Amino acid sequence: MSHTDESAKRPDFEGLVEQYYRPLYQFAFSLAQSESDACDLTQQTFYIWATKGHQLRDASKVKSWLFTTLHREFLESRRRQTRFPHYELSQVDEELPAISPARVNQLDSAQLLVALQQIDAVYHAPVALFYLEDYAYKEIAEILNIPMGTVKSRISRGIAQLQQALAGSPPAPRPQKGVS
Amino acid sequence: MNRRQAQEILLLYRPGTSDAQDPDFAAALALAQKDLKLGNWLQHQSLLQDALRAKFRQIPVPEGLKEQILSERKVQTSLPLKRKLVLSAACAACILLLAALVLPLLRSHEDKSFANFQSRMVKTVARQGLYPKMDLETNNLAEIRKFLAQHQGHGDYLLPNGLQKTTTTGCAILPWQGKAVSMVCFNSGKNPATNASDLFLFVINRADVPKAPAPGALSFAQTNSLATASWTYGDKTYILASPGDKAALREYF
Image 1 (tube, one colour):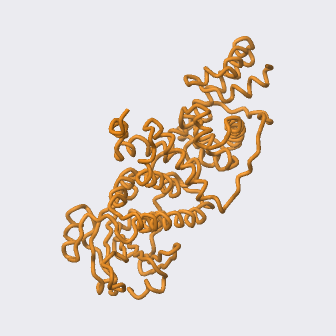
Image 2 (cartoon, helix red, strand yellow; image 1 turned 45 degrees about the vertical axis):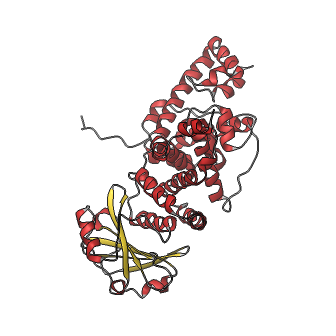
Image 3 (spheres, chains in turn yellow, cyan; image 1 turned 180 degrees about the vertical axis):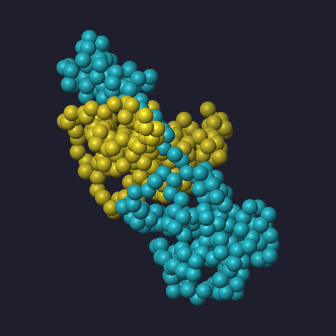
């Protein structure tokens, strides 16, 4: 395939933004847990694409490249604030709480955010990618630059913590009905 | 494989994806077909995961984010490489500082407060540097007022006395949370070697930013290498941002 052909497949900047700014922001929000930081991370990711994206030879990897870059930028921004512990988890060592899908459906975004804040930071990225994108575990491992076994254990542990947090949070207020 | 092991594996199972091709999942799924209790657990867990997945995908995206990304792209492509690198460093430093400042705060998904507005405008200056993208480049203040008034901006803004002695370089209308923000850029004249913009005035309707400074109050802040002054006058709220320290900014008031 000629270079020209590869370039022809590459999406233009505006098309790329249109296609990916929403999931990238949602991923960034899951990591940073603030609108302001999430906006910054999303913008910074596209800024880096604008300056370095041409180095990516395989146009089919654009989406992974964007998520990888955003995650790397997030880690860099937090580098001096915290060191993530790197440990393996062989199993989910706590029972999952009893929480119903209907209960989850009642949640609003603010409650999801509160629950996310209660899970360990090291689980945020794998859990967010697990829920936001239908990536294979191998792809998630590549994006986060960690072994696939670690990805699976972190997702398991993160899901367990998230469900624990949701089980402990109060239900969303429901519209009041007339007294009968 | 026992039930407990199968549960650990199936916790990661996502129906309708390539997961089903994974041998571990296949074995655990086969067990779930034989084990009624495990099957019921899997059904419940799948519904729960679907609900959580939907919640994640419903995280609201701020209005105007796409437009801001696209508008900044135009600036980036017109800057020389050295300046891009300097701006990247400044932007990264700004992100670090602001992240440290805002981490303790729990924000709602639609933060329309003045603090968030100020934060976004400061980042706009940090990111775009001394050569921001302008909708109109001119040193004619009357033209700027006319342009802003004709494009849903704020042509009737009021300048502090000190700012009236500087030279305008242009203006732009920026989106923020679905509202229009007028940015008027000035050259202070402190560096005769350049005609770049080094003073940035942001104007927004006071009603669009809850918790804006009270009328008569003038508030100064320092964010990394950028100083800001903010105030409210009439029905408008203003932010003046400039590289440097707060002391340098005070001379314009």
